[in-house]
Amino acid sequence: MHRKERALELFSNRCNCSQAVFAAFRQTKVLDEASALRLATMFGGGVAGSGGGMCGAVTGALMVLSMRYGMGGVEELVNRKKTYELGRQFIEEFEKRMGSARCESILGLCIGEPENLQKARELKLFETVCVSAVATASDILEEMLCAEG
Image (cartoon, rainbow, N blue to C red):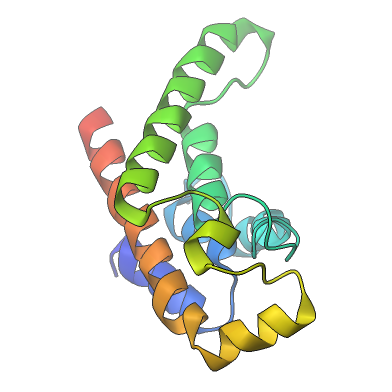
């Protein structure tokens, strides 16, 4: 199964957007799926379900890039700059494709408020807009990871 398909499958099986992207694209030899799902839990729904922060699909993707290229200690300080650059590149591309990298802007309402969460469910935003966000994050990650080799 391809990583994008796995991300969409995880999302359709009630994992949040951040969990789906991070678990599907994690370095499998470094981190098992259950641990990836635990680590990314907090970043779904615009960070902790607040609806006001960054889209969870974006934070999941940023965690993937950080896991792959990030600084593992002071001896790897040079990696921080490269990782930040890749993160900004990802966000810029995501914003081009989705219009924003913020949960509230993408959904058009703040799901951190109970009445808006219910409205998002009624409008099936999680099955449409959020699926698009997970797919878009997956597509961009595939492009970036393939370009890096």
